[in-house]
Amino acid sequence: MKRSIAKNAIAIAALLFITSFSVLANKTSVKIIAPEKAEKGTEITIKIEVTHMGNTKGHYTDWVWVKVNGNEYKKWEYTPKNLPGNQNFTLEFTVKAEENMEIIAKGNCNRHGSKGEETILIKVE
Image (cartoon, rainbow, N blue to C red):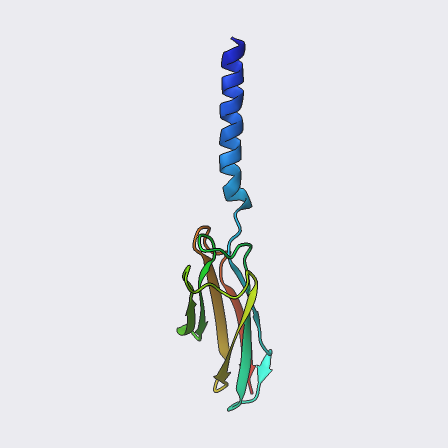
């Protein structure tokens, strides 16, 4: 009887331990840094701050993309042989402001996925 209770307790503890990893899993997240307004015809710099706990050959951010007005504008891809420089890093690009812009960015962890998209609007005057 005592052995049965001990076995059940160990099995429950092991199950809780294993399932807790999905709760603690670190998904890649992004934050867009850009001006709220831009003058028509100017080049503006947009930064994507990428946050992810882990940057090893087995656990890393494997891609980040940016869409401008619904069209993929830029994509960065990483592999175990081409890892990001750090677990938290910033990507930067420029875009010409011709019309109001909706900027959407998303990043992905090769093991845990993404925290979702970030969206901002830039008003072009």
